[in-house]
Length: 293
Ligand code: GUN
Image: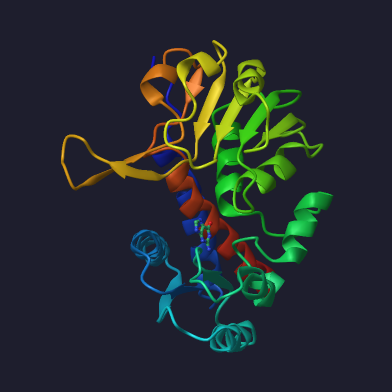
């Protein structure tokens, strides 16, 4: 039997649940609205936002993308956010990261109304997650990883989890989610980063390794305890030796070495990526339900 955790199949389940919630709202005359904002022409962001908007439309959301030039003054972006905050037809607002130099990301994410912050980046939502208050929005990638693990029946209560990477989008919120005392979490979490002395030794102890540090194929087979669960969040572009001048995508996990040792492992692509979109749309339908009362 395959040991793959099929992110596409699990995302499809979540999408089906979201689509039915969207249909309920639309029957009440409310169409959930999700506004995407992209600043500049980062090629990866173009692809990601395009995929998110397409899926939103498929599930019955109203969605739109505003593209601002890379040299947009920060104040113009904040102005747009304030206008969207006060427009009740937009239930969710997503400003795609990374933002161009000259724009201060914390100021931008702190300007999105917490009730529309379906990315979970506003300090109020970060604080709620840290406090274990479920009324906030949880960032989509770590929220999606939790959903993958729970729906794959990976035991979490008491599990030793090693997270690689302390970024604000994945590593830190992932740790905050997994340490909560709930039926589906209650893990012992080790958060490794560039200052960690012996990352491999931490990984070898783990029941679950979540790699989100952005180093191509960092997790080697000998770092995975036989029977451990491996989750690969990495999206790294590296030169493709088979096609000179071209690039190929690799994760943070050396998949061919790790798969035979792991009890379960996410493929990449087809693991974490689809879940990020699924959680974004689940967060947005909840934002709309909350305003509908
Ligand atoms: N860039 C990479 N991941 C994300 C995400 O989850 N949300 C936003 N807004 N930008 C991102």
